[in-house]
Image 1 (tube, rainbow, N blue to C red):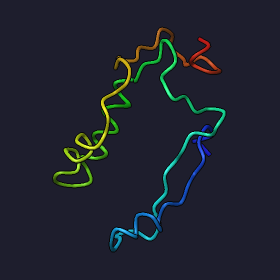
Image 2: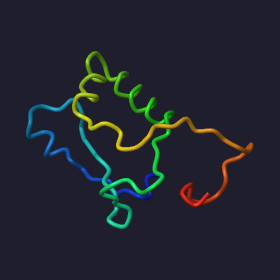
Image 3: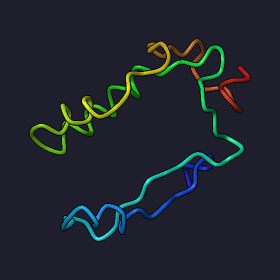
Length: 98
């Protein structure tokens, strides 16, 4: 499973309480307690490619969805930066330790 730092939580019942669903199941991911950070650690950044991918995904959901995402999501809590590989490979391990 790719999301090793998160727990998968089924929220179908909570979402269905608001009305009919177009999906059989709705899940979200929450940080495992050992990985939860109420505030960004020093030096934290958001990769611009990730931010663009998230916005593209919401835009692909249909008219008005990107605007709804932006209106209901807090601003990025840290600087957005372009990722640049300095070698022709990605180092092993945790990026915070590079």
